[in-house]
Image 1 (cartoon, one colour):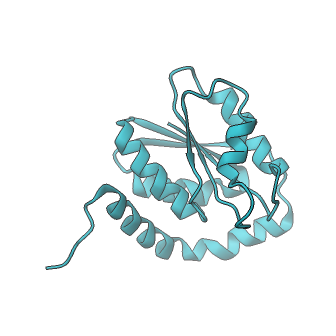
Image 2 (cartoon, helix red, strand yellow):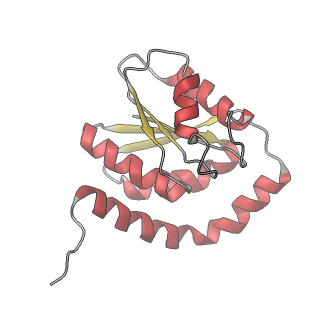
Length: 164
């Protein structure tokens, strides 16, 4: 399973260049038998989600594409991808993101998929100082995001606690 994480910075109708670079990198990585999961939402209720924009821009056959238009943060990308990975019975997940985002994404995906091989394949994208600072600022939130993502995985898999 190749998971492509979206990126928008609030754009409404087109892929951000960072997201387009991730998509291009994923297309180069994905083999004929790989399932590709495009993950990302829309900040604007009237705009298409990042996942749908990526699907429309995908340069290859679309029969192995899946879209996750609901993930708003990296932990939700990981939780939803974990559920898809289990449904598909895959043994490996490759996360496509940017180098500056790879550490946090890798921690979240590996924590939610401890029984699978998880690798991060960074696309060559710019690393503006504000994005590096943002990653540094949100990194301490990883344990809280992970706890929330684990609850989401349990809900999606039907193993959540329903009471005593």
